[in-house]
Length: 209
Ligand code: ATP
Image (tube, rainbow, N blue to C red):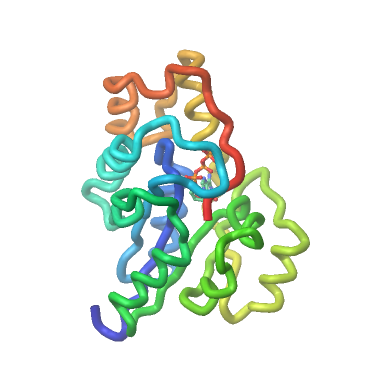
């Protein structure tokens, strides 16, 4: 990577990946003129219930979702057999690309929990943060204050508002409802062929950090 590179990072559980991840990721990539936008599935989320799909299955669905697009998938957290801390991932990426700017993207719901993330202040030193607006989510007072205080490092961005969540997708599959147009077709087919999300739906806890 050369000095001018800007690397976007969108971490998550992606259980499963859906258009509420993909469309905003693409829009931010264009709007912020990122050289690459990388989706990083976690292995074991820290602050939420464990995923229903296995790490391999979540990774496989992501690979299907980004095929033929400008988005990339990074499996570094998935490969680690230990809790995924964003600060460690960003530190590793910074070490690999010391001259590149890291742009860490997250939805408003994730940013609301940022205060409890492991070494969140270090994250602000390692990356710029972009908070994507998300339907049916209000930023907490703490989050709003932090954005104001660190306006050079944290910014909010409007993205196309898609009221889609993985929780809702899992619930629909469990109840035998269609998820067409909520996820890419190959992801929908993968879910069907692998009988995913047929057992009692889990409601996600807090976002991972
Ligand atoms: P769950 O319902 O299981 O909590 P989720 O749909 O929120 O899952 P995650 O994998 O937890 O998906 O999300 C990864 C990142 O993408 C988080 O930063 C989250 O805020 C963001 N995100 C997810 N869905 C949307 C959406 N519809 N619009 C904007 N951001 C989103």
